[in-house]
Image 1 (cartoon, helix red, strand yellow):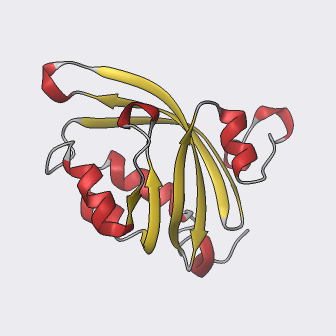
Image 2 (cartoon, rainbow, N blue to C red):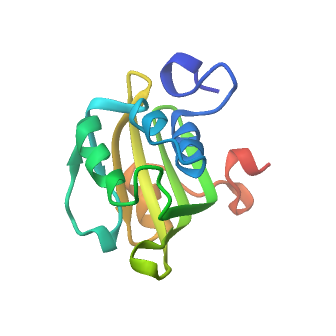
Length: 146
């Protein structure tokens, strides 16, 4: 297991897990506290190919979902982490403009100095894993699923 100062915390959660928990708990300031000053976030295909830079860029992306992230919801299906890199598979629910839009997304993450340095959406789980040099775990489970 990685040391808490590199990719996790004293509670055993990785930075990526803490990031998604903050999103699920509608805590934008907690999300921003996990972003490296030179962090880069390319969120999803439907958000376009824009890359948001640093905590201020991520704040701009989060703002579209309301001040309390009331128009954003997530369901995380899988997380694979190894040292300073990882992948997440989940469903994003966007309820802006009175409707509901859902899209399944795979993201890759790279960490630096205990913070998210790079996060990028991919078209598939395999593509996200490959982007950070990971492979599917035995039995198709992530280490945390076992």
